[in-house]
Length: 242
Image (cartoon, rainbow, N blue to C red):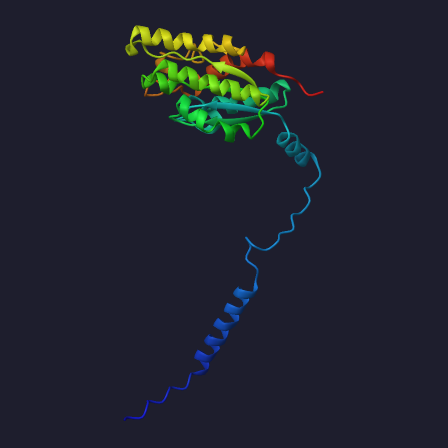
């Protein structure tokens, strides 16, 4: 049997690197991780900025529950009607916090499915803008009506006032379908005793200059008109803080 080869003696530089690596490893193991160590949160700074943050955080929630028209598809968030509505509320002296709960592609069923999570924010007012995608897909009007009815009932049961945004579909869906779809909104508003916006896209739909290339989603200018339409029907529900 051949003798085992002798191990080479580490050079001073190698020993220094090894020592440095050990110290680094011990430091890493002994230092609490940021996500697990208790953190001392500094008290909020006093002053006008802190006061403004506090006022916004505890302001009544105005929930914008909708689809891509509410989400502002193709635009910056600041150009969508919920953001424009927030600006208008602030300018008019109303203390509300608008939450944009618009999800592009949402149907009435999708909105109903996520309603519990949205109502956890305890909104004081809900602007309900759903159903357009149901109509564009030709979904049964009875199903859409039932979904919207459940949303209205559950919002009211949660203590929220609701404004229902009416919608219309293009005539190519068929005259009977279009008529039934259009009538669904005033029927729901009457049955649930909520304010109705007869057609939320009034003055915007069909105008090439006010819609994006798809002919469906408003431009920034179109969103301004949409905001004014919503404001007209929403304002009677608003309350100013004492």
